[in-house]
Image (cartoon, rainbow, N blue to C red; front, side, top):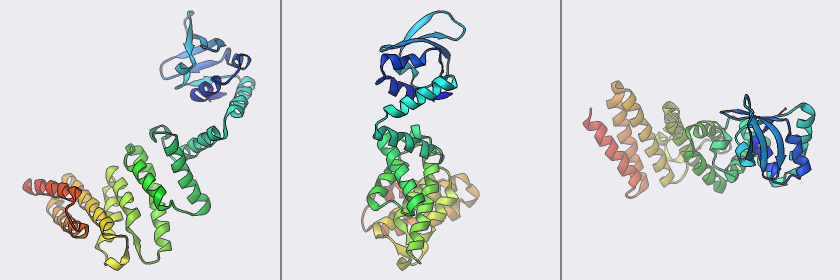
Length: 278
């Protein structure tokens, strides 16, 4: 039986000396080595590296990143004791980690417990109750995803798309600009530029079809222009066409913003540089 090292380390900090004896004769492997557990005490585990004879005492923290291997009987006992030792909060976190892992997320890249619980709850609530995150939680999820690693953004985009589709079904005939901003941003930053353009294409529709304020429409126009400039750099044969379209989108963003915006000014400067290099 395999048990994650982090789970064993968390349990060991609360286990009795007698309970710790369950680890004797187990094997532990990490990315570098395999160790045989000879004995245990409150300070750590006495181990021997596979193929060697010297015994070393390692603190429990040493074993956090690898995996313990035990026979089925001992492993079952240890697994049960680990489960019994968890608080409800610990169990909620473990469940959320597993839940997100089965949906393609690298949980270790999410940044912490609160982020894991937030995202797991949002996705599970949609799957079970058909409810999308409210505005407060949407802002938190927006910050979590756009500041995450590419793998988190790419995986998150799949669920954001589902939420956008659901929102727009409920709004019959209007498009959710606010939520499309996050979708377009995630697609753009993960290299899915065609999908970013698809998500932002609604800015060309009549104003009454857009469910969102002027400032939000401005942000989506700016994101669309940025995606067009990204494609122009990758496809020189389409450069003139794309830069012209990007300028139109930026002009609309500027008009909708109703004043100076640093993001729009930065985008205009990038557009000018690309124009000059034509």
